[in-house]
Length: 575
Image 1 (cartoon, rainbow, N blue to C red):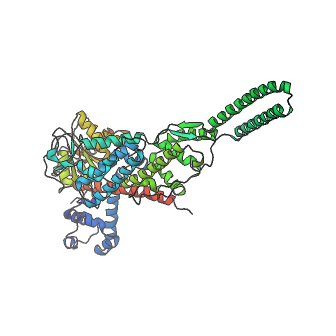
Image 2 (image 1 turned 180 degrees about the horizontal axis):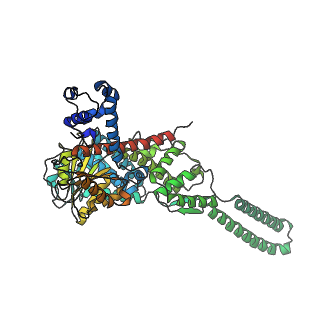
Image 3 (image 1 turned 90 degrees about the horizontal axis):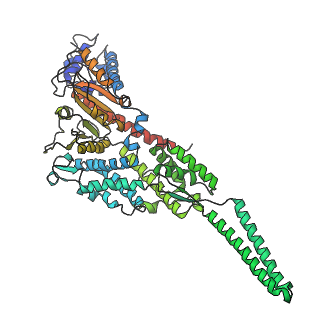
């Protein structure tokens, strides 16, 4: 009898009994059937160490150790990336892509219709609404009403109302058509709105003290000379020279007055001299943190700050800059560092107070306040979106993807008329602790299909890529299509019974691994599977193992989200 293989959590009751019987030192008279009659692999892995010691005298410690080794070996094979790859994911990255993804997540959650998902979608939508509400003061044609819940419901309609040529996200009889007018308008609005975040900042620079002293001295001299001329004209001049003195006084007064006026204008122009800082969102937040605490600002100092900001922005991650701004926020505003309350007008709640308002141009004060509020809103939205886990299933044309879905999520099939260009949405939460939306992406080489995959794959936190086995050079185009998303991928090679030995299986896995790009090697795990479920060879990964890969990917994803939140909270603690 051979010991079972694969993830112990996926073992059947029969495989659990086989594993126990395989252990050396077990008394032959031990009745395994009665002890573990109703225990499968999942239940076995939940048992504490004491249970093994009490249930299996003499071999309990050995069984517990062997089980943990198997679990650790499976865990070490998982390729979920590290902090570096996590920082490059869409939720941590560019502003427009992140906002479009947040909006799409809301649509997916509303399609599934589960209360917990709709509650989170409502919060995300409120964030989008408030974000665009801030930005629309700069761009008047922004329609913040697009992100209200009633508008979202209008963009989700019955399948019968959509055209057959549209690429749709389908769940049961409802769908979101990618070419739908409301959807396209919302996406375009998000992208356009974010282009004006961090618009050019006009910053007033204070005049150096010696310039002010020079102007005051010149004005003083002018007044003294003018006063002397008036005194000479009216009190000491003779009648014969009165006319000439009066003319001289007029000329002197004009010259002195002109000098004083030009000097004053020069002083006034210097006082209003501006540094127009053309910034994007990232640089605007970096600059804001550098200047809000300054009670005065000289031109040279401002230029140095701007140079430093431009340099720092090249190596700064958006979410890190937002996080640093949240640490500054309690010192300059009544806003809380977390979005605990999304209700009310955020503009009236801000109440910013900082020293830089004494010398900043009034328009700049508004711009900086807007940038800080945008950072505040986006910070809260990132926290909401960061732990959202949506699984994507990709691969070439054929039935392999659907067959794998049936083996992993047997109850996730839905009755709907699917066209060749639909993204099918499944509820894959039956075996997991959290609700897991699953997107089954269509295959095809058309421009529409390529654009659709590029738009919707960004919502996924992990992928299963299903390819049919080939002895030649594997085609990994579907895998490379999601490479830039920096999310974990399980590459399932459907052998169709053509791999006949362990050695052939090992060579096949290595061949596929060698064709994966270096950027993806820390994120892709290659397994051989049989989506029909008929091949139970030791080198074949079953549907149960794939299911637990999904569960591990979900746990890893949420652990990362929790750690990011914990690090920020710890940074706010003052010793």
